[in-house]
Amino acid sequence: MFNRALIAIALISAAPAFAVDANVCKSTPSAIRSAAASAQPEQAKKALKLVSVGEKLCEAGGRGEAVKKFSAAAMALGTDLAALSTGVTAQ
Image 1: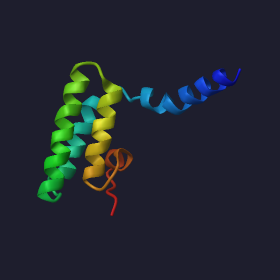
Image 2: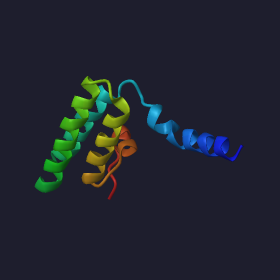
Image 3: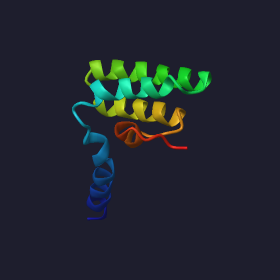
Image 4: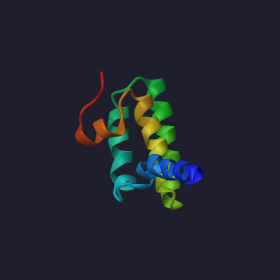
């Protein structure tokens, strides 16, 4: 019984990783590239590298893993994916 509870908790906590917007592979890279254009060179370089990896993961069908790369790219720019999708940048 305890094991079932742990499995249920693990599945619930992992749910957001699987609930990926179908358009994330189309819209997110361009939003990150736009943000990178005004970032510091080192931040932009790191973010663009992560976006490239994320795009390759999207092509391979790994949307969940791609979102992790896109999120890391946004963090490298000092923001997050939610802010990028609304056009707000964290300070």
